[in-house]
Length: 259
Image (cartoon, rainbow, N blue to C red; front, side):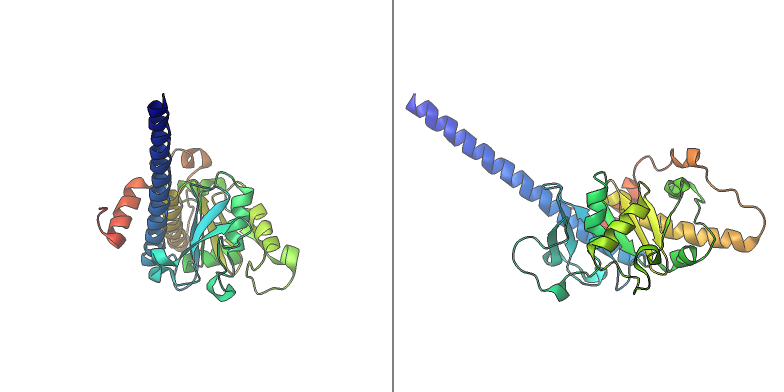
């Protein structure tokens, strides 16, 4: 009887260790994918020295991962920090200069959108004209069909008057999240865009094809004449694989084959 009890306790201990190991490996994979996302977005010139990408923690959905304040192309696993949804770093004290000023974009969107697993804030040049003009950004082709639901524009002056355009506190983050609503993309007047998705590969793919779409739309407009856009009904049926094929290609280009 005692021996059986010891075996049972031992088995429980092994199970706990295995469970802990799985969580650790899962977290490691998330961090590696996040580093890859930073480099992919930098390589496609979606992000330059500025902008940032985050991913919601699989282990604790009330936390997210994002790098310290650093150019995305330079990010390594050692630069990744864990934040709560108030955008405070978890564990230990991290000096304020090491944190992205606009981290509140991420925390407030994760609060407002439980479906969102990744967030990107970018200043991609092709997007700026659509945020400052009366021309709406429209879906041009299948890989950008997610835009067919419409792209709202965040006007910071409506709630905060004259500012430096930066999302430097939770209140501004909440206002941006409200403008985003249930959409995958919101433009920010004079500031760029925020892009979200239900996975990191999906969000990265949206960023890449958002940029392509903006450039293609400007080219089509320059030709003159009527433009036939992708309809919302068509848009719902596009990109069934969530850009998984593209993600594997891009990830290998920046990190090499998976071990």
